[in-house]
Length: 118
Image (cartoon, rainbow, N blue to C red; front, side, top):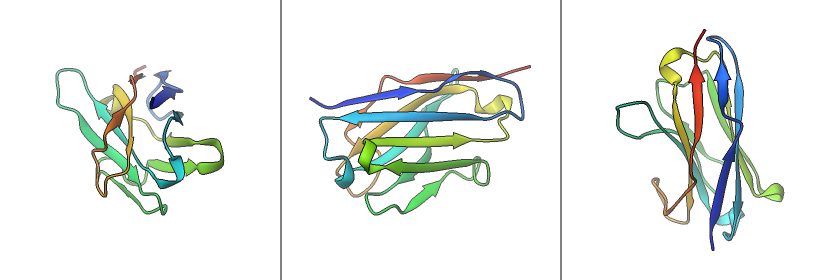
């Protein structure tokens, strides 16, 4: 049974930072690609960043230079470091993982809320 558990969300002021974590179980994590998606209020879910099983990364233009995706295979955990947060980054953030060659992958976490507001 695959489980992806996100943590690290919360309320932060504009310009602040947060680090999201995605702890995976039930998958061979080192073989899986991992992505972070987000769904702002009233909008469609969108890809934020992705990291392949060989550590190749890509991210949306809207977060380039501010967000960094990484992974620690020894801990079966992926991360999304978010800096210089803006109100428009407010969304539910979802972890996504699986073995296909491209995102979106098969498995999803339950999501964690990130709110950027003063």
